[in-house]
Image 1 (tube, helix red, strand yellow):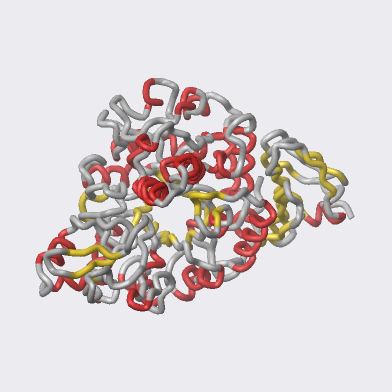
Image 2 (image 1 turned 90 degrees about the vertical axis):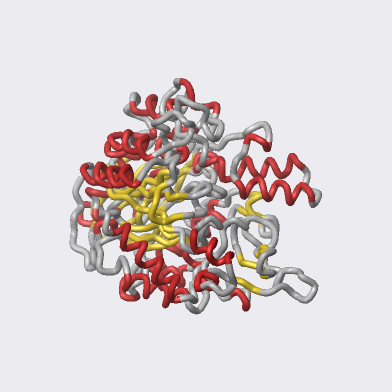
Length: 559
């Protein structure tokens, strides 16, 4: 299929790209120590090339004490020993480039590790210049923390330093002190570090919790502070702006209006952001993700339509179901049991045909699922463990808290990648750092590659379609059947070209009455998880979790 037509949008190489996120600790262990590593990733590049992806988003591999699995960085310009060496990451960049794959480094600059030399110097004396690299405040008169702000990982956001008699600020673990972005020296250090990585030939940065760097702590403004966008514009000028790279910010607080500020090319900030409104709609307003609400498709469609429409002309969307912090897509939005394959393909189709850059999280392409470990002791995630202790101590029943972890705990995404049905799923010859999902004997990459009708090859086809179809990349979005409780339907439109995308989000068959303007249309079936559709009758029958995409042209459709 080829629907190349002209568009006035300033095209970028990443507009038709697909990103694959690797959580290195859980991807592939080459040396048998139970921890995934850079050598393991290099050994799987042919697999990723076969899938067809263009970028690898590499979760942090920097030197770190691993209090938060690498999101606590002790040296931005060195590699954690368990992952490998600088020479190996340079080899990864080079080997990936041979396969037309770029590396997207995870940039964590809201905070560092408490073992970073900057923080060690900051603690050594209140008079060192490094003291102002972090955020320090004196205690209240009774010795208590400066205020009542809370860490996202539970407990106070202030940690007392006995030696100096002051508190430092940390929005995450107490071993992740927040950097003071009001200090120009911090900005300069970060910009120099970014340029050091860019000079190595990476394809850009994924920016961890970047909406927090403009915080005004004394005013309790954490996200979208008044200095945020000026700081990003200065970062753009000082580092990646002149280079042809992708930058994506993790922005839990973004609205479409704010996202346009980040991603409008005229503002010279970022390429795109991750927004999470479609994720948080399944969280309880009071208890958050630990007390999940049922997925509401009508509300989901409203959110998607809002983001697709409001970023249509002056921004760009990131498209994702899951990542290293979120549950597995097929468990959250599909059916991990009887219709695992069908629902995984449906979710892939529904997402990849939207306008924006799709992100695939490792294992998503083979339909990996959430896990239910028997004991809290089997979990490793610091967030889950902290909240379990805090909330059970406050009276939340153990069983209730475990159900929350089963549904939304971060270790769901972090169980080792399932390569085959052999010992440890082919992930490691040693003892894996985190237990495997027991279903690896049925759900694994080797089985997927042996089946031409597998989820893997469905993803491969979707990735290929983005390269062939300009309407899939640049067409505008039109929502259909807005109030239907089971079906997510939309059109993409570019000139005379149309894509119709129909997705049944339920385990029940559905009979649909299509809008009059779509009945009797003939076109080309591009992809489907049951069969291809080349014509639309007045009524359309959809099997459980069925989805399909049909291309047609207004000029060739019957009147």
